[in-house]
Amino acid sequence: MTALSPILRGLALLTLCLVSLNAGVQAFSQGDTTTRDSLQSNPRILVLGGGVAGIIAARTLHQNGLDNFLIIEARDEIGGRLRSHTFGNGTTIELGANWVQGTQVGGGPSNPIWDLARKHNVTTVFNDYSSIITYDEAGPVDYIDVVDDAVDNLDKITELAGERVAGNLVDLNARAGYSLVGAKPQSPHARAAEYWNFDWEYGDTPSGSSLVAAGLNNNFTFDTDQGGFSDENRLSIDQRGFKTIITEEAKAFLRPSQLLLNSTVKSVRYGNSGVQVTLANGTSISGDYVLCTFSLGVLQNDDVEFDPELPDWKMEAIQSLTMTTYTKIFLKYERKFWFDTEMGLYADKERGRYPVWQSLDHPKFLQGSGILFVTVTGQYSERIEALPDRQVQSEVMGVLRSMFPKTDIPPASDFFFPRWHSDPLYRGSYSNWPASFTRDHHDNFRASVSVGGRERLWFAGEATSFKYFGFLHGAYTEGLDVAQEMIKCIRRGQCTGLSHFDEVRNVHPYGTN
Image (cartoon, rainbow, N blue to C red; front, side, top):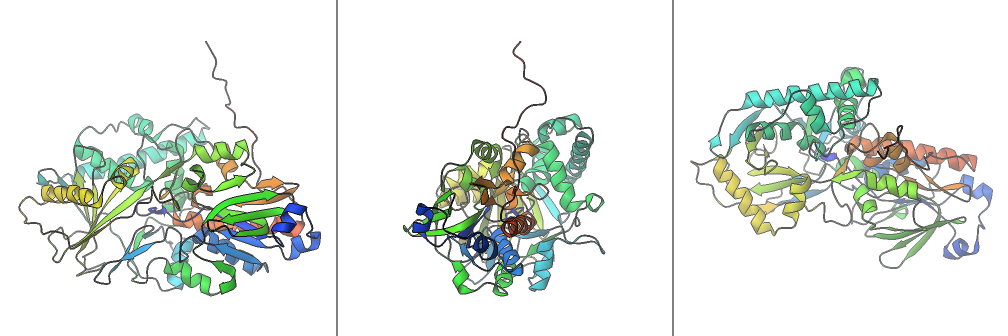
């Protein structure tokens, strides 16, 4: 979202697959040899994914006396979509989640990511989005009034979304919402301003996004009247990497024997006697329960095989969501030649073509770093991932020459961008709700899967969050909440888990006439 919600949004982080390990592969195949008492007091639990959701779930298990767990992480470090990159000069930049989005006002609710940042002394700085200068293909052009109108239009569709929720009215896509409030951007300036306020946050176009979900998602984080944290966005510039919030948190409870790195999960088998996870290197690990933190994109692309296949209601829910991509393209120069504001907005004739620029070489951020970056999202992110770096760099340089026609722009000394969409560990940056997606589908996506009267499979991550999908704090709250639900089931021996709907139906039939 606006920044990583971009993370993060968000990212945020892997959808959590927590697996309680059984005594071994033989026990799995021969039947349930585990006693009821051991299943309740000391189940073996595998946490598939070491992102925010996975680490917070593991911490929750530990705090409740369940330490027989193993976190299985594909990369060589924990953090999930909290990923950083270090340029040759030693400057660390954030490829994924970059912002704390919403902090705290007075004694109101506090964003748990903000709490972690303060707890571990992670350096964040207020990112002032009003510190912006505008450009188009002719160079610097002042259309701030159009940008301000777009801010008002976002407020209007958010209010419209609230009215539809209150009236129990059917959802629309956000493009329809814009049209209903009279916002029909035609010029490059108006389209860029809309992109700045919508796409840059949700990672998707208004046409591809739910009006109701977008409005609620915005309110639950930024609107204090709706229980949100605050409207403040703080950029992480900590040179240890933003992942420090989770790596430092893990040090307080995680033992080396509870973490398996460089281990990609290829399949999850589940049955009456437990679960069996097979890694890419052929290693099999057995357990009692599993909590999945794989990203939505990984689940949608069948990068992990489930045996038996997930139920139809679960698969329908998984495929009903959208995994979008948010790509930051970084350029490093020996000298700064660009704007002195924090942000720059470029209006191209093609909507979404290299629109949002940010200077890290700024007195508030990483002054003297010589780093500038531009963000693209959605299908444009997918487009550039299919191109060689040199072509993307050439296109970006062409935009810079349009923005600064009187400047002799030197070649970049370094250039880098991640390929989130094509990376089999992520398949995108974070989730988004399309207009056809329903609350019942979301409940099904979040629901646990039962086998033989036990809830063997659990799922958690930013995408399973109703309030905070796409945000880093969505991954945190889901890791916490789903782990707590797991603990209730484990302690009781049997439970209903997180319930689902066998079929998601229309209130009214389509009709055939």
